[in-house]
Image (cartoon, rainbow, N blue to C red; front, side, top):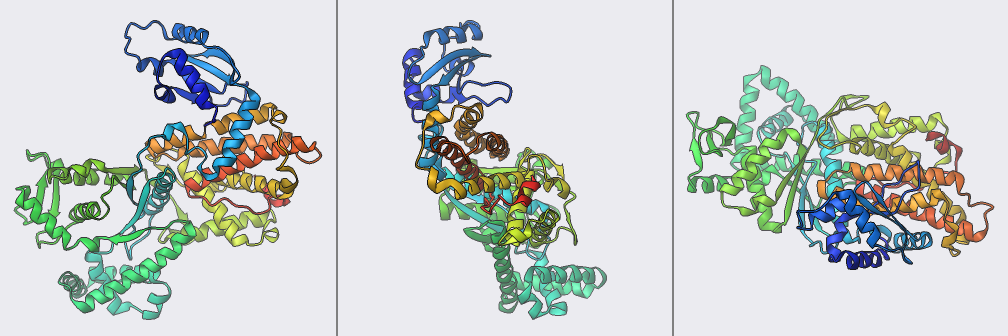
Length: 587
C-alpha cells in the first residue's frame, strides 16, 4: 500500500530475477505483535518457490537464508532477517510513517482499494439478491442475516469499482395470496392496511389460516381467489397489487433505518408467465418428465436417482418456486447481462440452488457457472419483548430500546442531541459485529446480553473509538493539522498502528475472495485496541506543536480507516461528542 512499495518491489524483482507481478502475492505485511516489535513486510519463500518450476529445490529455510544474503539494505529497507520460511524486511521508520499517513489521507475512502492486489481487476456487472422476505409472513432472523450479509457483499463489490445491482426478490405470489385475499374480505380494515400494512396483513393471514383449517368453505374461497389471480381477474389483481405496493413502501421505510437500499424490488409474481415458457423449453429439450400424480419433474442425474429429481410443475399446471427461480435468472441475464449473480440465503437452500444452476446448464445456459450461492448458518433464540421476531421493525425497536436503557443507566442520554438515533446506530453496530465475528456458515445461539456487553470486542467499542477520535479532531484539529514531522512518531505504539494500517488492503482482499466479513471485523477491532492504547500514551494536549500535529495525523488516519471499514460492513460511524463521561463509562 506504501508508494515506496513499488521501489522495494523493483529492487526485489531485480535481485531475484522475477517479474514484479510474480512477487505481489508472495509479499505481505507482518501481523503486529504485542510482545515484540516485528518487521513490516515478509516474503513467503514457499509461495515464491511454487512459482519457480525447479523441483530439485533444497530445504526452504536454507533458501530463505540464501535469499536474505543476496538482498542489501538501502534507503528504503533498513533491516533484513529470516523468519519461519520467510524473509523479513523492516522499512526505514520515517519513510514508513510519511508514506502510510500520506497514502491514508490522500486516498481517503479509497485507501486499501488502490492496492497492487487489486490492480488489473476487470470491472464487472454483479447482481446480488438478498433479504427477500415473504409478503404477509414473518420477517424471520434468516431474512435479517440475508439483509446484512447481502448488503456487506454489495458494499464491498461496489467499493472495488464493480457495477452492483441490489435485488430484493419478494415472496409475493402463491397460495398465501388466495388466503390473504379471502381473509381481507372477511376481516380486513382499510385504515389498518394503510397505517400499518405489514402488521395488518400478517394478522389477517394468521386469522384466515385458522378459519380455513376449521371451515372448508373458507379454504375453498381462498383457492378460488388464487385461481382468479392466476387467470388475471382485474378485481383480485387490484387487491393483490395494493397489498404488494403498501408492503414495499413500508419495507423501504424500515430498510432505511437499517441503512440498506435496493435497486429493484422484484418478486415471484413477475415470473408466473415466464415460468410457463421455462416449462415449454424444458419440454422441447426432452427434459420434462410427467409423474403418475400429474406433476412434472426434471431428473438431473439422468438415471432416476431420487435425490436428483426436481419438481418444476404442480399437477394443475402451475409453476413452483424452482421454476420461477429459473425464469428469474434467465430474465436477469437478458436484462443486465451480468458477469456474476450472487444469491444470499440460509444454508438450507443449498440443494435448491445447486439444482437451479444445474438445470440452467442442461437447458444450454453456459452462464449458469457465473451464478453463486452464498449460504449462511442458522441463528437460534432471537426474541424481542413481543416474543419471536415477526417484523424487522421489532428488531430495530428492540435495539433502540436496549441501547437507550444502557445509556440511561450511565446517564449519557441528556448529553446527546438525538439519543434515539444514536442508540439505534450504536445498537445496529453491536448487532452487525456480533453476527459478522464468526464464519457465516456457522450456526449460533443469539444473546442480547452478548450483543450489548459493555466491554470487549463489540460494535459499541468500534463506535466509541470512532467517536472519540472524531472528537480529538474537533478539539485540536484546526491548530495542529498543518504541522507534521514524521520523526515525532517513532514510539512503539505509533509504529504498531502504522504497521497495522499497512495490512488493510490484504484484509479487504481476503474478504473479497471468500465473502467473509470476519477478516474486516477482526482487523477493525485490533485497530481500535491499538488506538485506545495510543490515546492513553500519546498525549496531544501540552505536547510541542510538531509532536501534537504528528500524533493528530496518526489518529486522523486511524479514524479514516476505521470509518471506511465500518461503512463496508454496513455500519454508519457515529460522530457524537465522546468527551462526555458517560460514553467513557460504556467501554
